[in-house]
Amino acid sequence: SSDLATATVTSWDPDTQVRVFHAINFFGFLWVSNLFIMFGFFVTAFVIGRYYFSAYTTELGHEGGDELGPDEKYVPFGSFCAGVKAGLTCHFGSILFGSFIIAVVQFIRAVVTYMLDKWLKPLKEKAADIGLGKCVDLLSACLKCLMACLEKLVVYISKNAFIIIAVAGDKSFLSACVFAIKELLGNFSYFAAVTVLTNACMYMCKFFILCTNVFLGYILVFHSSAPDPAVESGLFPDP
View (cartoon, rainbow, N blue to C red):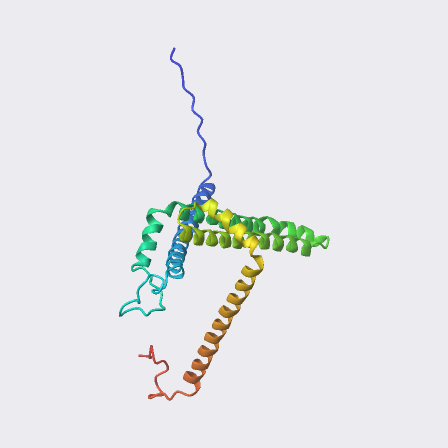
């Protein structure tokens, strides 16, 4: 008699398969998008670091020639291309790993948000009968706020780690994260002041752009003379 081999076959529900594939595609989208964002951030940090740590022409022992003055910085040519080359050849693994960690945190946040919206809704209806509906909303808001703070913290530390990698050039992502955390904790007041001033300047610039657009829109709408009253739009006139 021949031996009969038994095989265990696992069957998936089509809905489960679709959800798993959507989750994989969503995580891949998060990873690739963060990879491009962090790579651009690394190149920017590399170029700015090259300019900041470049020596002045007087320190190099010459007057700078015709193109540079005696008190101008001597920035090496092709800093952008050098940053792209360094990111692709020397530090691509660190950028890939850092973007992976950010994608994991963002994916966990999305899953937690989905689970809260799906599972807490029937719980809220039951809790509303006994007067605890607001407590469920408070719990959901606290968990979402916690995940949002965790994501911002991971992104902030990762960006500082990429700055250190771009400037030092001999650190891995994890060692750069440890160094960045030590520097942030040791100079907390300085970084807090710089962050507040930067955000204030950004909001002022956004407010200025908003006011300028409102003013220009008001001028165009109320003080512009149309050459033909039958034309309702200057960009897309009616046929």
